[in-house]
Length: 337
Figure 1 (tube, rainbow, N blue to C red):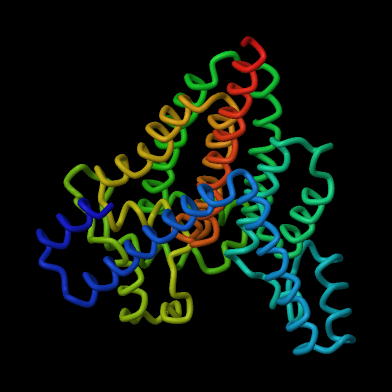
Figure 2: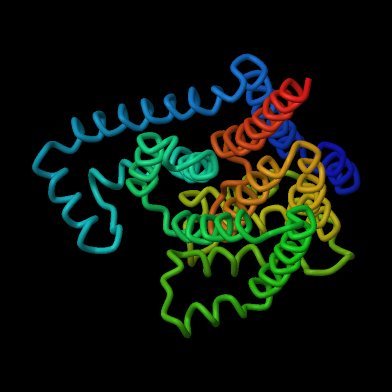
């Protein structure tokens, strides 16, 4: 990412504001990786549990604060609306839409599912509770795709590395088609025909489509370009400053890193990462695959690719299973001797 965006900044002679913002965000991503690695080396597999408890305490504190702000009667009305109107969040429940934490709880669900439902019933229930409390629809869809896939692969798949590579390649190609559909207006047409409320995303995609082309000639505009653009641009049909983000990480990566940058970024996560984790055993590889399926599903309508919380937990989970595999291998060697 550093090399790609530095090249783009140099070729486009980007303004200092964009360059500073981009490198600041890159430093932030580096910090996320460092913290997850340090936590793993300090606490081993327990790093996942400790991080989970931290998120639980954070969300519990947020509930108390939201209750104090809203009052008990308004909170009850908000909960009643939420339960009877398919997650329609207002007032008290709206304050609990803590995006970073909600999507992280989805990864915790995958972890405790793979680690053993009977082994972690309490933690799994807590993860599901807080995940549903924030009720991100794309997150629910992502979990409903990842969990059955995990169960099927765990039971029937004989060559997980090959399956993961094939699935990764399909996601990359599907993402490119998705970006092209948004560019040519097909996505807006389909959602309009189906009566799907995109919550302003179609207008947002219409605006951003002027800033990229689905072609090898498109080299990208540099990391964090969209953030600066939405902050400074003005159009009459949508309040860009209020939105602040594109709510689509496929578009964000394509616009900022370009045609080839898109393949480098998605290939790194979905192909290289998947192949590399194979050296640490099937569980680490399966965890990496399911986390990738979950996250790349959320990327279709949200900004989870560069969230601190999702980046932290997504890296801890495969590491935890790699340690588990190493300990199991050591136990087998001891039994033989």
